[in-house]
Length: 468
Image (cartoon, rainbow, N blue to C red; front, side):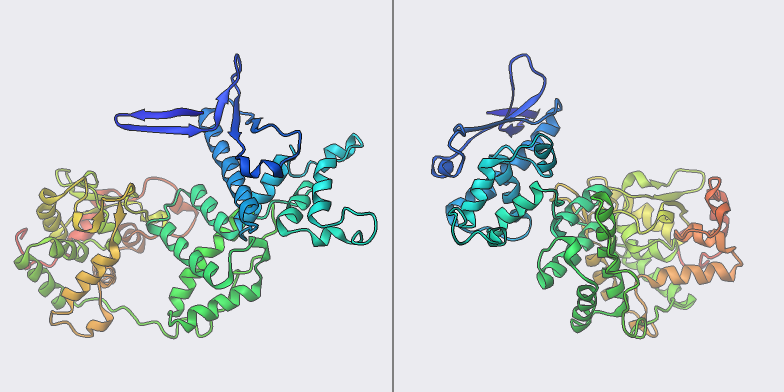
């Protein structure tokens, strides 16, 4: 049977296989065993699988039912084809094998306490190992079990359920609230997919330090820069650490302090724009006056990151405040790089002009809709597309050392300009979204917008445009 979990307009969400017994608040699972696999179940087994889900919560019951149905599907597939996929499906089959005999992982202690043995289960294991006859084939018969039955036996006798890397990734993203489609979650998804394609999907405690070093070698062979390799290692490492902790596994720290040969030697220094170049860029933005130039103008006098700009929502912009400003904060389309990135930034000069021009052109709540993919259930910030487009236009201008200057160079320029007007480091960090050092930095609310704006006004190029 199916239960309606949600009904909203034309949308109805159903949960299959759950029901309640009369006068009971507890949810139960019921599913018909297909005729073609019924012979694989104990002779006393009814044609329906029925058991308590041991919860009164409807949503939790639906999740448990889905998990059990997935395990059964994997088992029935193995019955029909004689094949069992490796990885998480192997675990699903092993769990379903236990379930069909009414057993659970780590249940052997309870049986032993009452001097009992799961006779039907043990008979099945001997059958699968071809060790039913008293003569021959008896010695070490457990080693001859098919992998799914061997895992089922090991789990019954107390072995922890193996956590495969693909499962670990999914659990990590759920724990951290990251989406696999954008931001840090998307980056982790890509790194793990590449790691699995190279080394297979294994339980996380089966990878070794050698595997981690081979992954570094693999990334180098593809031409990745050493900084990129470091970022990818930093994406995958916390998955092992966090999921090992969650499941009481030993974290073998295979990625800890990993060595990346010649680290940093291939880095290209990002140069800041000169004041004359900034003046020229801002005047070109004023003349062209389109959404690409609004983004560039915003970056040039604010010091915010490109992803922070393209992910701005209309509710983040406060043009009518005593001190006009933007609130840089996470939203559906993008997270933030660091904790210190959550901040308020005064709008001055070209950045103020840019948002005055851009705000009337916003769509579905975003200031720069060109770089927001609204077709997906979760909005996606297309920052890479923006970076390529902005860089292409900037390369058409008369800029020195343009191969070493890009959108990120505006942040370097803002820092240099603030230093020149003797802005304290703590204020510069507050504007650009870096954390200040020391215990005291964590106390209080930080600098007011008035103070931040006073310093930002000092770096505005006075001959560039309409606010002068």
